[in-house]
Image 1 (cartoon, one colour):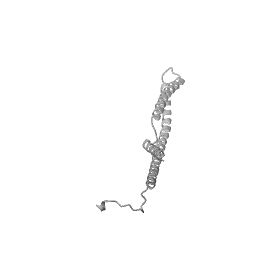
Image 2 (spheres, rainbow, N blue to C red):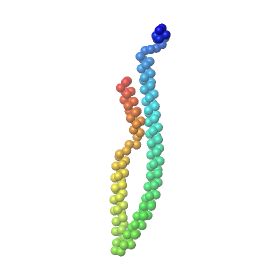
Image 3 (spheres, rainbow, N blue to C red):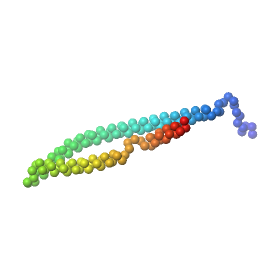
Image 4 (cartoon, one colour):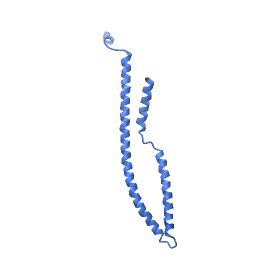
Amino acid sequence: MADLQTTHDPGTNNGVAPLLTGIVNDVQDLLKQNLALFKVEVREDVRKTKEAVAALGVGAALAAVGGLHLTLTIVFLLALIPGIPLWVCFGIVGVVFTGVGLALLVRGKNKLASFNPLPDESAEALKENVQCLTKNI
């Protein structure tokens, strides 16, 4: 039974201070790792957002040029109807396109307001770790 008993070596440091130091170091390491993960996720989201904005910009420019040509085509097709002046044709097409454009702008604004581009899980984990650290210190 003597081999089951633990012996206390006075040379080993079994105090509370080293234990607390270890816990604080572990919490600091955890915070550093969470912050690093958060930074990586934000950088990745920013990169993806830049790519998407570039594609949207080029696509919007090309669509605008094409839309302008199609709009002029519609105007001149309406002008073929006898008795409608050209300015009325431009007015009709302008009102229709303005209405559709405004409706799409409102829809896009509402959709954009409903989404959060930040990585929610990492931000929440980082927030919890900071709260835990501030409570324990």
